[in-house]
Image (cartoon, rainbow, N blue to C red; front, side, top):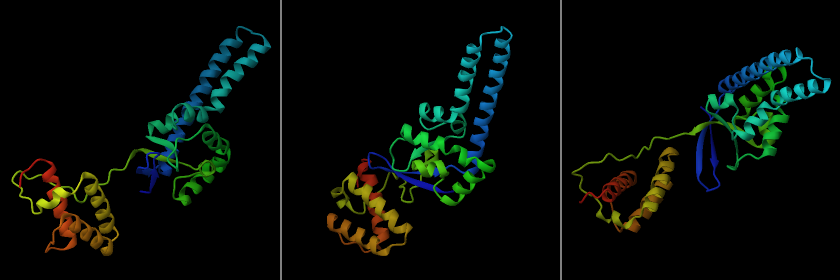
Length: 241
């Protein structure tokens, strides 16, 4: 599963799953079915109005009113439904900007203008572009610097999650010198060091924590940091050593 990281305007990095080609095709088919349904409803109304023999101008107005939603369906939906068409909403998909900002009217317009190119040859252009791009972008997305993602951000399992123990005894009472912000940074850097097998970073984190706490552990750097995380959890949970 391909993912994309987007930094929000609050400078928070959020990871999303990129919408698969299959999901986007299904969303497109749902939207197509809605458009076809609208077309047939309009035809029925048109036939009924025609039986009343209205003026020529009435015909023109009626045709325009029927065709505008049909041709501008995708653009109108994305503008007024916050980056979602009804098909996208059904599949939990959404258009986002890669820079973390909300797409503008111009961005939606660019996507819509390139739509004809994207659906060329039964959508082959869009499918190929999305498949090789790696960021879930068709030609219209490339032009607008947007992508289509699953609406729910990914939730990575915390490899250092602590199981609470009622009778736990603190190994390092000096952990009280650390703040919540310190612990958040330790977790983040430790996860990065372990994931990328960066022993240098692991050592630097451990040495810095030892310096702040004023302790000299006899265990490995990794075990020391895991113990610090566990101690901090139980200390802040109100468990006495």
